[in-house]
Length: 472
Image (cartoon, rainbow, N blue to C red; front, side, top):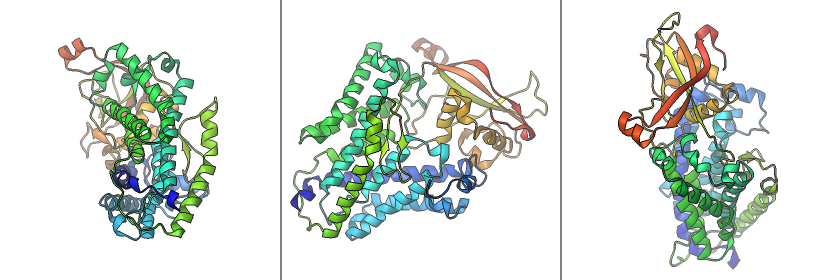
């Protein structure tokens, strides 16, 4: 079938596959470095406790069959190794079926992690990586030209990511329609980056232009992905430019980067198609069957997207094959942060010395400038942002985190930038307080050197010792 393949897109496929392998590596690396404190046998939300109450059919995972911290580490390490092999092009050195099986390995491993990851893996980019990773299995290698249907389905994902995000904004917070959301967003976003302070202080008319341009990119440009070249490439290029702007303005894990990667297959990068073997019949049958399956599963995401009660970041099947996406349907006007402190005093007094725990990414010390972490995902830091919005977000895990801090648990302390207590001298009490944070002005920055100014709001968790740990 001559229509089945698009030989001119061989280079676009190559760049897409290598970049996607890089994102897989980041995802598995983050999982391997953070799981013990978050999901391990003594984690804040232990996997064994989860699989004991959730059946396999609702959350298919290797860890439903067996779990130990060592086995999880093995799976994460295997994912990293396979991702490196894919980035190095091992799939192209294998037969077509072998390359497909190699791409299937990280998808199965990451699906196993996400389906038992609970709150820590409840972000839209987890499902997005799985949906894109599943399609990558069927994109082929050097033995065949890229299948048109798979290229189309990758554009279909990109369309839903962008258009869904645009719709949720127009239906959500009125500030998106008034073009004023960026007056607040750079200051109140989950994890500011090193340039976020400067983005916040851009002139307000420029913020209006940014929002208007975002609406065009998310509500109009996605339709151009399905037009002939070079229009489709121009649309994808505009999306890439928009995502790079977002990369500079904050830390959104790999959300922006995978959106950029998704736009690559829409780029006509090759000047001339190489001579490739004929497409095997079995491969054509498999791709046609998968395409039919995914188009059928698109019903629920499309229905959700056009619904007035549209929801963000929802999976409609346990394999995360076709999902719905969206971000920042509402924008906070004020930033709150939970500051966690400990003291060595047996009985807390008014004059007790309380020492602050420093997190890696979330704001803490007003003089400490934010760092760039994306595409790496600091899961605890992100959830601390949600905890500041409402204690309900932290009810399931915050008490256990405090308990681990009181024990000076090494796995938990590795999630932090710095603990104020020596390893052999844990705190006797830990407390949490809620502060309001705002960016300093240019004049305040020059005078104090601080990028944040914070004001105490209320107690979040009273002074607590090991025998008294409760959730906020």
